[in-house]
Length: 419
Image (cartoon, rainbow, N blue to C red; front, side, top):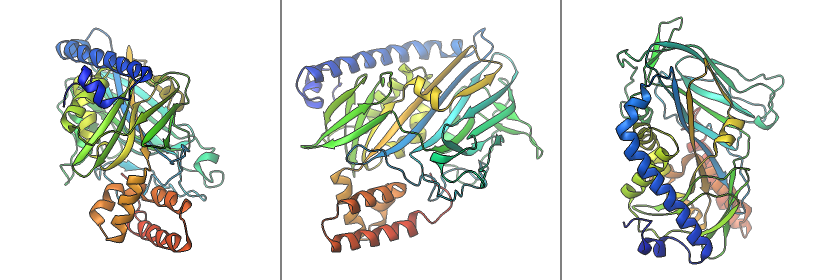
């Protein structure tokens, strides 16, 4: 596929008009900045990572949410289904709210990398607003649910906090990290960086890893919403004070995919759905450069893409966007002591869209018992079917959709853990 910054590509991938030209020019600047950042960072990454500064910390993660067709942020069951984590990862023992663990955001795989010229010991604390920390590794202190006061995430009183009190940063240590039988687990992709190995002492012995890992669920509202408009357009709205640095409208149906790129988004924008004629390889390269332009080292950006590409780029429609740094700091404050000389935090927002095409695919899959197709939508089946039920034209359609929803609960929501 031709460069999105070329005149030919601009005619193919953006709507006509002055607003689209401004968006294109904005993204071109991001592309240029990303390319320059890659060239500069590849040549200087090692020098930056082993500088005279005592400590550099980089973090990446994902905030996943779901938008109804009218733009409302949906509550869903993000902690359901089968786990995609190695067996050595620790889990919150009790996630059974009296009101059910329904949230608006699934915080997925934040990892913290540490770079130090010499050995150091640090403490780390993160708190998830209106949320819970649900999985982590290495061992940490995590607040459990107070069954006497906590009825649901939006009414939760207990802090959703995780603390690693004594993290040994060991730049010269051998990378002896744990493995389980599933060697192809996406968790391991995050290890493919030059970050310093870490070690934490536990009663059963030291636990070692390339990073600090954690996940969570929250009832906060995401900074971005999207409304499905007529004639295959999507209206996006940034509700946060700071601009969203970049966003991508992505759609995939089987082997065909397409995407449209947005530059900085300070308020509203209307974009048309993409043609399904794009190359996944070229998109991955473009998105990886975007992550580097936000401050990640090239190997970190690549590790993030390797971790999530099978999920981010699976069947369906979604918006992927860079979450403003101040939003991340406000809903997920992070304290590291002693404070690092540099702290970079890059979070990607994932906003799932329930489009008519998605509804048609899901209904056809249930009707034909196409379990392979249904597996692509897995944990999103409940909000998809709920949306379809809300617009069911008659009693017969409602009864059929309710039977599909019952099957979804049985097949995808009856297990104890989610991906």
